[in-house]
Structure formats: C-alpha cells, structure tokens
Image (cartoon, rainbow, N blue to C red; front, top):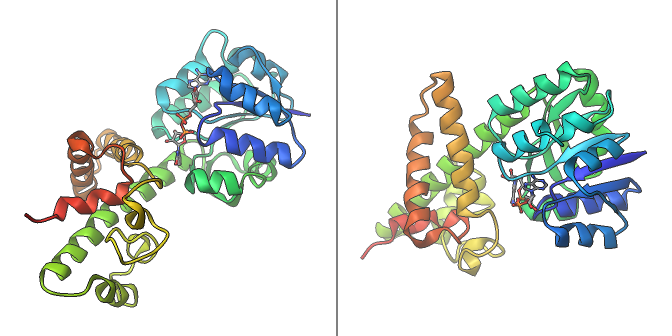
Length: 295
Ligand code: NAD
C-alpha cells in the first residue's frame, strides 16, 4: 500500500525518510530532482509529476510545501492531486498555510470524495529528523483516526484540533504567542541587565516565577544564559527569522479576515518585519533580542 509524499525540503525529506524507516512504501515528488534522488537512494520510488505521484497513492497523499500558493497549485492544478488521486484516498497537507486556503482545498477534496486533513507541525527540522514532531490536525473524527497511525510514524504528539482548517488555526495561534513571548522575554532580560542584574540570575528567578515561559526556560535569547540554544552559537540554526515572520503574517492576516484584534501579534509581526529587513533574515528568531542592544 503506497503513500505519495510531495515536497521534500528541509522538513518533508526527513519526514518521508521516517515513513520509509517505518516500512512504508513511498512514491515521492519534488520540483528539485536532487531532493527526489536522495529519497530514491533511501528506498522510495520517484514520480514524474504531482499528478503521477497522486495517482499511485493507495494509503494517503502527504504534502509538505512552502506556502498556501504552492498548496493551491499542487492540489487544484491541472495535473494536481485532486485531478489524479483515487477517490477515497485520504489527503494530508502538513504545510503551514492560512486556515481559509486549508478549508477551501479541503472542501474541494471532500466534494470529490477524498477526505482531507490539514496537519501542520511544530518541532522544526530536528523534530522532523528525530520523528518527534507535534502534528496539529484539522479533520473529521473518522479521518483523524485513519491518519493518526501514519502521523505517529513521523511525530510524537498528534493533536486533534477539530474540523478542517483547525490544525492551521492552532499552529498560527501558538506561533503568534511564541513570537510575542520571545520579544517579551528579550525586553525583560534587557531591562534587568541594564538595571544591573546578572542575566543568568535573572533568568533563574523568572524561570521559577510567574514570568516563566518556553522562550525564557528552554530557548532563552540572552547570550550566556543557556547552552545548546541559538543564543549560545551566534543565533545560527534553530527557527529562522523569516519563518517566524511568515507565521506572524498568517496570524495577522487571519485576524484581519475574522475582524479579531491582535494588538501584540501585529506589533510582533512589524518588529520581525523590521528586523528581517535590517540584516537579520539569516538569524534564528531569538536574535530579536538585538532590538534591545544599547549604544
Ligand atoms: P522548504 O522550502 O525547505 O521545502 C519545500 C519543498 O517544496 C521544496 O523542496 C520545494 O521544491 C517543494 N515544492 C514547492 N513547490 C512544489 C510543487 N509545485 N511541486 C512539488 N514540490 C514543490 O520548506 P520546509 O522548511 O520544508 O517547510 C515546509 C513547510 O513546513 C512550510 O510551510 C513551513 O512553514 C513549515 N514548517 C517549517 C519548519 C522548519 O523549521 N523548516 C518548522 C515547522 C513548519
């Protein structure tokens, strides 16, 4: 029983490898022939196009693409997934995209007899390699039960968030909060240090007090506070500033469509936009602490 995997980039390639390791038969496609060749050397079969890959899928089609426009093309295009998939085969999109596009593509799939889930992930490339991703799934209950074992071969936490689009809703809410909290921790650390406090001592107090959060206790942005975080290695690796900016853009755009104010989310989006445009696009998102550098 074959799974089609389309989109073999930084995330998709290691996810596909984990499916192979779990004993799945895979057919793969990517615009990059090198990416396809890598997976073929690990035991996958190469497809010639999106439609070809989808037509060979018996168990599921999984996609891991950059953004909503790619998801539209891959699913709704002339030789796309919907045009070629066998009716009844479940479709799973793990890209991070806006909920409206996720719901639109899911409705089109559902309308022709292919149940579709949005299943964006958290955990980064490290989690993709280790098979420890969190999947946030928007799907009807029956579909969730069907695809859960497949997702469990690539991830550790598989969360059912409700119907179509709700996986994307959970993902953008989480990442908006992450962006806001990273800026908040940066600001608090900078204030404490400028008022004479040792950054390590300050972080210790915060991490046993009510200001504690993931940005303070697991991924502290202040250099010298923690080992094995991007702040300890010049803000290389980790979760890139452009990816945080993308997710904040998805959150603020979804908020605009819903008429829901997101005062801090919008401010965070603007701060990351300024930061990326001013020479920091290659750095981890915790480098936002540099906003508070003095002199
Ligand atoms: P990436 O750019 O490395 O990979 C995307 C792949 O899709 C590329 O190999 C590209 O060639 C392929 N692609 C694009 N259009 C295609 C088409 N029409 N047909 C076939 N293949 C096509 O991106 P990534 O880092 O793997 O991220 C994928 C998604 O996961 C994004 O939505 C991203 O926001 C999300 N995400 C990324 C991370 C991370 O740390 N990189 C973490 C969580 C979520």
